[in-house]
Image (cartoon, rainbow, N blue to C red):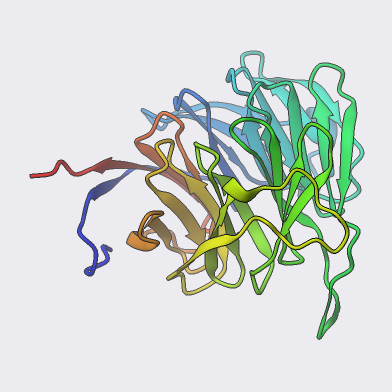
Length: 335
């Protein structure tokens, strides 16, 4: 459904519908765009993005397959050889994709793991959890280098607000770590020192997803308040003293979703912000105008996760309707 008030510059088509046996909690493309990983109950499935064929199913035999254990997050290493998965059982598993087996396990989180992100050089992995922490792990030693805790207590009309970390992302240059939280705040840390640099306030409800633009100039957050916000990273401060005001300002707010914004992603050329919502739609936004180009419809339930291929041209969506979809997008040639 195209926005009639905006000049149409994109063509989008459905390429594959991948049917699963439970809710699809997360979707992630491999760095070369050839594989899509989907996380659902108890296992992670790898698909060939060209044919839609199932390549393999990653299942931890040792986890006991009886109880529910949704894979909430997945992240490919920059070289595409490893896949990190995080789930409700509080364990981070590192899979060797070629061997289809677990090469490392990181334990320590005290609640489910909602989000994972590799550093650009692949040497570290960041995990975000409902236990109010983001942890930075050394991929070689398996050690937890930093535990970044959210210690502030935010009190609303209904009492203390949970500050679980829903989403983590590293800046393209690897300098910054941003995390979205249930307490409505986006926090930015120095990835090298673990020092808190800023708290971005403005959302009126929990932040469920954060993403950096490919040039690192802005950060996007998606919230249960039905909006996305763009934050200017140009003003990031090196340290944040007690009582200091935020330096990272909100550039603009993207409004249009009719329900919770659950996931955000940005195209590799920085031209499009993609968001998935409980309203079952996927919006493509132009960051320069802050207007929606169009909304993709097709899922019969919440769009829980969106991903854009790093090589461009493909978008993936994961939904509560027990399916994942791969869509193609391309800019319409100017006449």
